[in-house]
Length: 476
Image 1: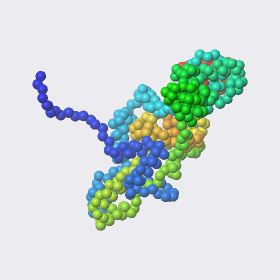
Image 2: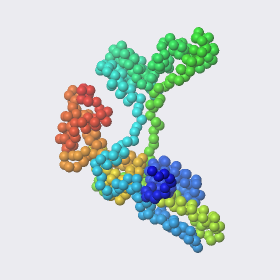
Image 3: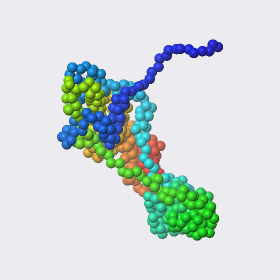
Image 4: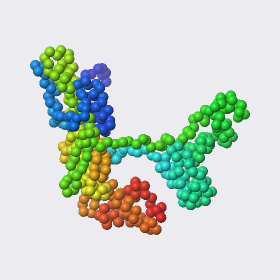
């Protein structure tokens, strides 16, 4: 075989995206608080872009071609809104070829819905412990006591009431409550359900293989208050141990977690700001309006535009102003397109979910990204970006736009019903059941079928579990 360097030609496709398109996509996808930060950064780096004061209207208008008198330096800036939309849609097509109007298979729709539903919430300490309790194999009495113990833990993971109160609340003997506490204290995270700092640390030491006579356990039991006050040498003298043992024990104690529940603490509340409102009535129709007070009001400085138009302005200054004004107008255009896209999606929601606005969640209808994208003439992922982390004010309250894109189940009349609406109906059936004879999943499926909701028993079980409701034999 002959070896050597060979030159050849080959064709290949590469996806490249201009920085401006990336910027436009960031503006489209960003939630309102993040959008404000993006705009603040643009204001800091672009002197020709200014924010309006207490003006009555948002200063956003479609960009116009930039013309410099006696100069033809900016033909490349002659972009229009339609060009902007075409470039965004072309990018979405490159990312995912099945654009608006393309055939959408059930599998593809299921993947999109999975993407929409994939935002996770942090698991709470109580949910973690209850899951371990349910799988512990304890009998009903011990589980009742265990649930009372878990429900009375503070944010640190410590038990805040005594065993007598636990026993009364669970209607069990105090010895049963004590046994349940010993079981819960073996759950993760180590040290949970302790009644004080000393017990919390001793539980963790025991779980780490440190017996009651180990140096670390002896220090916690007999000298806990002195651990932060005495030196290793002084502690060794007080505890009657060698200084080496004390140093090793203190290092081990410092590695323990005195507040094991804090890692499960809920994050601080997130205050959402709706940027669009749907209001009206079924009789008069629902209207969509952007909430302009929530939007930053931007404009291109007239002073700088006049400076650019002045023939006496130096050439270097003219080039700089040309670039900055072009960038500023693209920012305005990006914001305008974001507003229009969100408003058009909200309009489709208003038309599709009118019954929800009047009657509530039981009337929520299935809606897909692809169906809205097809009506708007954009790509599915454009709709997906636009509804992410955006909120709308409605007659039923404030909701994330994503809420209005639920999966659905078929009904007897050939229509469809949102899964959230089915869950609400299921919860109401269980709430009205005879507690002496709880309804089985099969019986619930039959009752839903009588209401025109065709749903299998296993789907009933799935929805019931998602609602946090136990099976029939545990609801007695």
